[in-house]
Image (cartoon, rainbow, N blue to C red):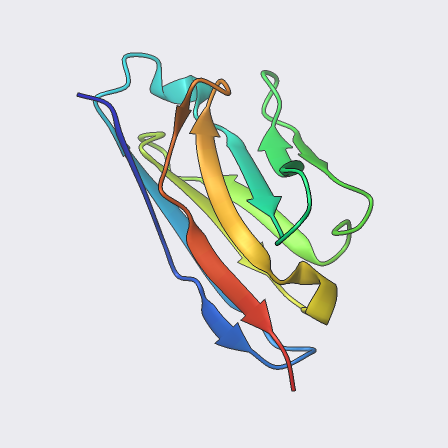
Length: 112
């Protein structure tokens, strides 16, 4: 059974930091669970960061320079380090395996 469990969300002030984790189990191709997405109320889900097949990170323009995606050596846990948070980063954050399997999401709220 495929299971993706995100954690690490919560509330932060503008300029603060949070670190999200996504623990993957049961997916036969764990090296393809490399994407973070987010969805704000009333908006479509958007890609935030991903790890390309060659291992290089890719970021949405809105988070470049502030967010860092990484993965543990076993490729069972995906991370998203979020620094210099802005109110517009408020959303529910999801990790995904190849856009097919999804976690339940973790809420991030940035406000003063």
